[in-house]
Length: 350
Ligand SMILES: *[C@@H]1O[C@H](CO)[C@@H](O)[C@H](O)[C@H]1NC(C)=O
Ligand SMILES: *[C@@H]1O[C@H](CO)[C@@H](O)[C@H](O)[C@H]1NC(C)=O
Ligand SMILES: *[C@@H]1O[C@H](CO)[C@@H](O)[C@H](O)[C@H]1NC(C)=O
Ligand SMILES: *[C@@H]1O[C@H](CO)[C@@H](O)[C@H](O)[C@H]1NC(C)=O
Ligand SMILES: *[C@@H]1O[C@H](CO)[C@@H](O)[C@H](O)[C@H]1NC(C)=O
Image (tube, rainbow, N blue to C red; front, side):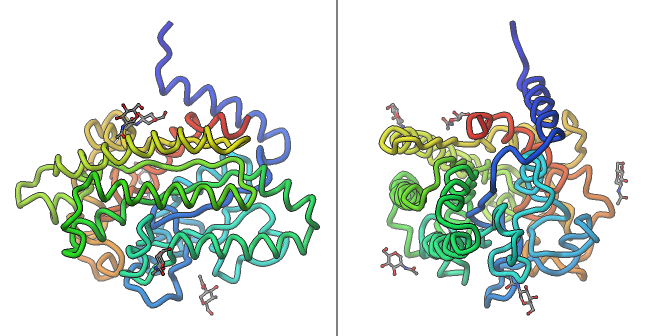
């Protein structure tokens, strides 16, 4: 019998929605690390150009407010929080919302323009993954003080930890940084893998036992990539996509090795490459009509400070757009991605 991916997603969703509607969230907490794909405002008060805490960002979010999310509305991780049965989204650890009992169900450490390569974060004034882990350590002490060691440890080991990084390492560093020109994409990916591996081991050392990591999207098809790296051809940069595939293969392999060497760890690689490529290639299959141009501004390069209330050409309604800005999916696309994550992440919940 052939069961389509979509059907599988719907079935798993159905089971989950049923469970969730009958009680508690499926896991005690949701903890998030990474870059702009997952940042919900940790960069807001930092000295960096990589921010999204102004309109039109957030115009379709709760109360139509910008939060620091690089999206018109919800991120894939926000939908994930909903699907897991949480009634709120993990707050940015550096924000004033991250106080009180609310933090027991998780917080978010992600920082736009961060990456596996710690110089990526430094280059842009973002929070490096090492520093995100330091903050997680701090968070753990706070939780221990609130509920005691035993319950705290149950939270940390039961929580789902999501990591979403790597795009900035390539787009905002490797392809534009003359100092990295000496490395081939293969060599650069190897460097990133060492850092990834060390991150997972440290996270495991802090008690995490359920970890999901997203792979790289088709970075050569992002609207701004086509403009910046497409050599004026208005075509995908196939080479960038090949680099992403190479990285993703290594990510799979490294993850398998980690899974084998760390007892009791559930480590799942979430494929976002294929689902996003499908949306870009066949937008209408998922109810989209535009996948080349983003909604914000001309849709060909604007992101962060360049996507603002004075950007000319911003679309009125982003629901038909796969991309919200030059580098980031729209809320509508994030919802599709989150459905795929859920289907792939059943192992993390069971
Ligand atoms: C930034 O500063 C504002 C004003 O002090 C505060 O309300 C907010 O929580 C801070 N956010 C972050 C992420 O630091
Ligand atoms: C990057 O990592 C190296 C090795 O751990 C460390 O010595 C260096 O200080 C880090 N750089 C930044 C900017 O965090
Ligand atoms: C990596 O593994 C995931 C999940 O097992 C799979 O969907 C994906 O195709 C693999 N990616 C590569 C590049 O092999
Ligand atoms: C991944 O592992 C397989 C099997 O061990 C190997 O054949 C392949 O070359 C590896 N891929 C990469 C990109 O390292
Ligand atoms: C955008 O369009 C969709 C589909 O046509 C519609 O359901 C939605 O209400 C519109 N949103 C806004 C903010 O106009």
